[in-house]
Length: 401
Image (cartoon, rainbow, N blue to C red):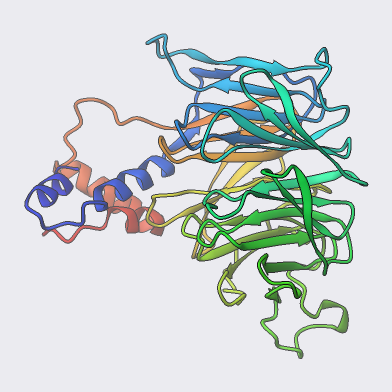
């Protein structure tokens, strides 16, 4: 740490290098926090969570019981042990509550005054946070598996929606109507994600084993379909041509810079793709257990070097190095399958929700006070760890000798 600070003060180091190294160290030290609880409100499994990007303070959760909860993650007590309180709940007693399972919740990217939820009751609702009443309700013909608002869009206010109908629906927040459909899939659409780099680029995943990338400004079909064999016909059977997985594709996630796209499927595989060319990078993550028939919500770290992937794997959360596929650790603490997890980039924390009705907080372990990090003992310890874990070595590499 002192070496980073000295190099930064002397102008020898990149300003972000210390931040990236510390973020990486914190992610590698994630553990279940015994001192932090999250109010247990849901009476059934938790399908989806989302942390707002404006303040990084409020978290949404949606459950299989149709209930939506807003939590305050801040600790105002000043005590080490505290509970993240539920500040408001859209429960079964509300006349506006979803009738069936809530599959996706998402904050409006620019303001905590609004959020969007979608459900198996064939509706998507746009909520006013102040009144906890829906300002707009979109009705669909089938169950809604997923929706997504672009985190960067300035020229449009479209919500992409995936339902049991193979056609992707584009709903306009400004007009309150469905303005366009995207045709190309042959089965229900399980996941949709807007690119965090280009506001008109959309990725969609379906039960037909395919992932398509669209430019919503084009009237014609998709830009391209991801092919796990990169066009090599000799490796693919006739049924597997232009498929991303050998099963249902139920998870999508862009990296923070939008350059890569991650997909998960019921073939127990996770794949990393170049989002510009659609090329399979062939990173081998090994077996990634995936038994979910619905959308699987996983996440990627931001601000680390290297970046990490957090993906539900049975009753645990598996942590992988993004570009090497190395399994770094398994976060164990849930009593039943984990369905969703979310990374908090401000504090390098992870929140996970599962069928055990619990939301768990995974936080970095703090360094013990009074430890001199430039001592010979510390240097030897870091060297020992780096020889075991390449991710740790990359994070703490230094040009200083």
